[in-house]
Length: 272
Ligand SMILES: Nc1ncnc2c1ncn2[C@@H]1O[C@H](COP(=O)(O)OP(=O)(O)OP(=O)(O)O)[C@@H](O)[C@H]1O
Ligand SMILES: [Mg+2]
Image 1: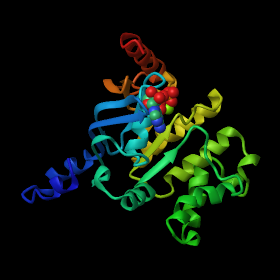
Image 2: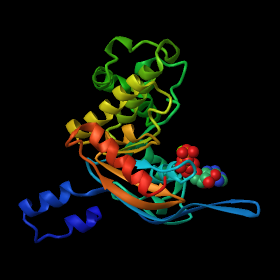
Image 3: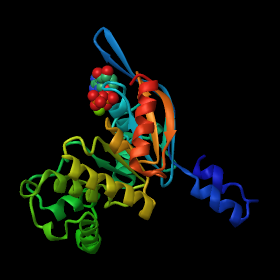
Image 4: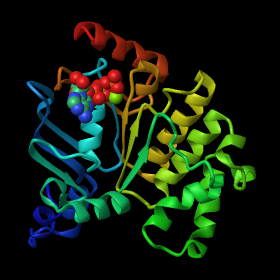
């Protein structure tokens, strides 16, 4: 449902409108296909994928190596263009915008977290967090309190002036998380955010993401191989050979162990 679709319905009363707004899709992929042509060979990385993420949801994308997970994440975040199909992010049809317009949407509406942290080594933790605002031409002085608050949220209040090489891997990833949220994004896209962390640091990072979702209503899509990591999400989408083959709602109603068992059962069923 687009913004326009919601607000054009003038006859709706406020009480009818509120649930509609709350249920609004932040992200919609519609019949998205991505083909890579390498000389004679064409790889169909995604084949006719349709996918909706509602505001406040935390979705894990799972699937074997090469199934198209990173490709999907890159397309959703406007880092790459689909061969066909449409992607709507925060009400903007990013697959139909110019490069400059997509860059702006990406800068203002999307936060990215990568497997290898991707911090700038010469900048301090606080400066790395501030980077998306700097790139957007904003005055950092006006955002100092927010940056300090984000560092506190990720448990790094005492590390604001440390450079990345003075931080552990888990701490670097937490800086990257603070950075992903600094521009109040509509959606945060994370590709294997715990892939390079030990299990304790990985858990800290996942708990943080889940908190950003439950307490701040943030919307998150996270790619992972790990059923335990996926158990922190509210929904798991399974990809195989470029297709979404199953969606599994999970809720930690009975703790992570039960969710992990459910996820692993579905993986066996789907031969993933
Ligand atoms: N830039 C590219 N050029 C050509 N082929 C590509 C490119 N990027 C990805 N592919 C191909 O598309 C398919 C999906 O790749 P993708 O990186 O999305 O997989 P993935 O599910 O993220 O795998 P992994 O778990 O190993 O990270 C693969 O077969 C890959 O070889
Ligand atoms: Mg990948």
